[in-house]
Length: 135
Image (cartoon, rainbow, N blue to C red):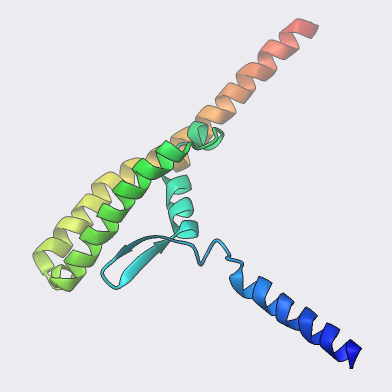
């Protein structure tokens, strides 16, 4: 009987501890209407918005709070546009496509073409300087 009580106590305690613990996915940092933003979603969006140099720095709580405000406004505007049916409006869809082509091209060019080429050039320069020391 004593063993049964101990086993029951351990099971109840384990259940209580696991049900009270929260994973990052479950932590809701903002709610708007029926939607919400989790900490993991916010963190992922924040990291995507950073440049390569900024990713190496530790984020401060103030930066995350400022980004949260911007991200909530962004998500609310997207939701509002969806509710109003702007996604079905051909004129707005054309404007979005044009914007994506013009802005997207520059982002693609910078991130996928120029940045890797500059890294290779800087690496080659560094190798030239290092080899000049030895010769």
